[in-house]
Image (cartoon, rainbow, N blue to C red; front, side):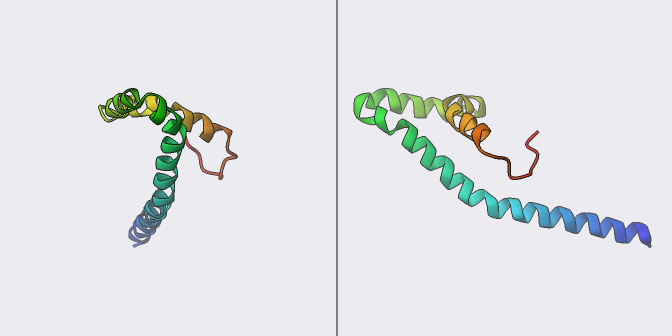
Amino acid sequence: MPKRISAIVVVLILILGFASLVEAGTPRSTWVENEIYQYNHPFASQLPQELATKMQKMTASPFAFYRGTAHIFYRDMQMPSSGSVLF
């Protein structure tokens, strides 16, 4: 019986943890979209075709996306931690 209760507790903790991550994902995704736009906006008027090529390449793979958004990584590293462990 105690093993079953502890298993239920673990499942509840996991469910509640993932629920909070899903809720937190919405503001983050909006922030990421805004950062990509703000960072690349100056290039839109100067080199529109180059910007379109960059955006197309970023959709090819996760690596290409992260390579094209390195500025977001560096901005994240400058922000104070919220107490969560990233790695």
